[in-house]
Image 1 (tube, helix red, strand yellow):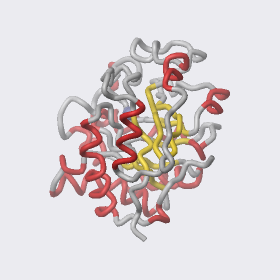
Image 2 (cartoon, rainbow, N blue to C red):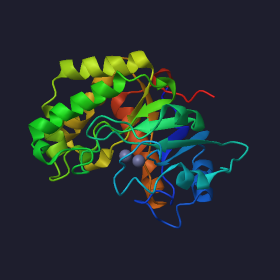
Image 3 (cartoon, rainbow, N blue to C red):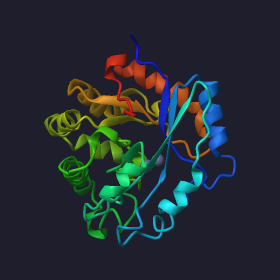
Image 4 (tube, protein in one colour):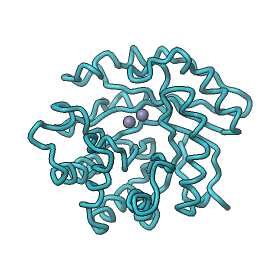
Length: 266
Ligand SMILES: [Zn+2]
Ligand SMILES: [Zn+2]
């Protein structure tokens, strides 16, 4: 059976400072889910735990007190609305979530590819593409060695352009620098830990050879038996218009089945 588009578990509300869109309400998010026959969705606003010192300026106000303003979340007869967050890993490989705080969330998204926050996630001296490729591998590897509840963790946007934000194609060059063998080692670990592997990239922004380059890590992840979830990473209502079509194109390109799906456990 083809992988069914029945969820979107990476969504931001207006509470995320990079959304700050009064139209991005929990009610509008639920309406998007109902409109598209989704069965479950998850709110994943940006989050840095107040118990972890030295947040940067962007994360500092986005503590638990702030993101919990979204609670309680509205649900419908057909849609389950989970409460999650998207936290961060800083340049010293520290996570922005304390051990105890995992209990407050149904699902926690962790990106290792946010290498656009100079001096917070990456050092000024580290900006070459080669160095970014090393960091891609090291950050993911460190994360996967942590003692954290992987059954409720999603590894976010592993081909995110923010890993090398200066030029349009730089993130593809960074991915090209990582051999299949290294991806296989990393992604086998994701599969073994039973963490979710996020499907999130703008399919229609790539074509031909570029599309093959961005698909390579996902193909390897599938080979490694990773389980995938859909995440639009929408910050605005317009983000939803594109999401379903985008999910569908990714599912077809990777020929994903229901058995490839990551699920949030209650
Ligand atoms: Zn992100
Ligand atoms: Zn996000």
